[in-house]
Amino acid sequence: MRKNSVSYQNLKWGYIFIAPCIIGLLVFNLGPMLFSLMASFTEWDMITPMKFVGLKNFKQIFTTAIAAKSIQVTFYYALLSVPLITLCTFLTAILLNSSIKGISIFRTIIYIPSIVPIVASSALWLYIFNPMFGLLNSIARALSLPTSNYIFSPTGAVPWLSVMAVWMAGNTVVIYLAGLQGISKDLYEAADLDGANAFQSLIHITVPMMTPIIFYNMLMALISSMQTFTQVYMMTNGGPANATLFMSLYLYNEAFKYQHMGYASAVSWILFIFIAIITAVVFATSGNWVFYENAGSKKKKKKEALNNG
Figure (cartoon, rainbow, N blue to C red):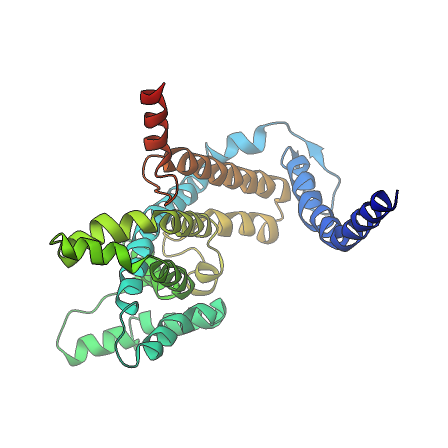
């Protein structure tokens, strides 16, 4: 009886302690999501009553040129920035994993940009990319090299924003670095005894052992890139010629600039569906390349089970 009483008390206090989180989730996350889903089927300007229009808003997203442009820009940025971030941060972490004198200084330098507020970073890069007096063009002129319009060019805006995203990915480097330091040195010593060079050790030891972390960082970068807003709002406001009109900025303009809250809600749900589908696809395909130290890849484990059966 006493044991049951203690268990009940523990359970009761456990629910009391998590109650603020549950209430916050319901009030500030789930509640607004359900309300926006309801609003997505209406015409609503936040002043007059809602008018039910069915699937009109969703059809408009796929039949309006500017909406299609925002979808195209969002996917283009994700396809460009995610591989760039994944590769650059991984290679940087490998360099920072060395044991040279003063390496902690370089690790700090790489990490600092990730803790700088995005607004401040945007202001800094806006100066760097300025075609008239910006840092990059000033250096180019001093070296008698061609100048560029960078983010103020319709063709160059998204690629240069991707470069900026790499500069801000210091936290990703830290995660990779932690993973690299967790790899057993015995594996490298065994490979060295077998005559493997540094590149072979990288391909056959480092990369397979790091695939779970690569998977996590790549997924986080993908979700973050699809939701990019602050940089483009501060630096380009969707220009030039809608070249950086990401879906998040597009729905913001529709909601708070044009008061098309119902349509903006539909855009937000389309964005949510895109992210959910991409995330599901990444998870579904991860078994083919993500290696777990104790179990190997899911595909290998399944093949062994079939062979044994």
